[in-house]
Length: 376
Image 1 (cartoon, one colour):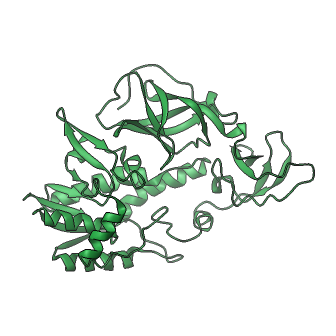
Image 2: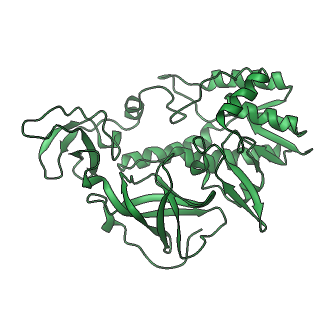
Image 3: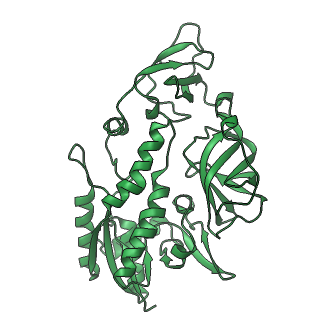
């Protein structure tokens, strides 16, 4: 391997080992640190610490390190959408949009401007070429597989991307980092949404979406409490409701089962497996396909409605700009705004954004399906 590769060095152990492996394979490697968020000073920001770690890794490996600030692009292309979705009472997934718009578009463009032929990241996923097309595959380490978050990137990006960690397990990555003496070998993995970090999610969101208290009630209309804002909660959530024992009620935990945005009401019910959270169908929009188009107008596959969920067998029917997914078994807490991602074995086919489900409060009739050609 002799071509120039620019690795997205985040300051974490995964991207550090990605650079290490490419260097060992003989690639001409450089690094690029992306700053995607600038805090306003009201909370911790990991960017400075991460940058220092990226600099230390680059120095250790003898790599040239570039740095670019993509925070303006991130705010306009990812964060604005994040806030708009929460204001609608939905639960967005910013990582999917960040990958599509920033890491595999803005970063790729910048790397090419710097003379790179390819980019690489520390994502746990695999890419292979078959039949003249590029396929996105699950990582060998299924517990770390990140193809769910990568389903919206297309052929152009896949053709220019390397995932050096796709065939490794996390413990192997840690061992390689330790053996090579990388400064990040013992660094804790980052979790949660990148721009929120370790701080309280509700407090962060409240800076942009002021609290609007309202009733917390059962599906039958009985008021059982008050919420600070429906956008602070997601379907299936148990924690943070503050509902104690109630006279005459069963001794079972309460869960969010719906949101009435018009009335600013949060709907709750008792029991983890209550029927208010169960659905067999969902409708999705904003469809993207790894191959550029779906495999057929109607096809069988497995689908995930949340990260790390086992693939669920289902049938998919493609409409003009939407699709309907029929699951073989009931699914719990299908949340509008989240992604549904389709798989054929290890291959990721693509996915879309969940609009509604046929759960009792899932708003199924609000999004009628239309027939027509698939939207790629």
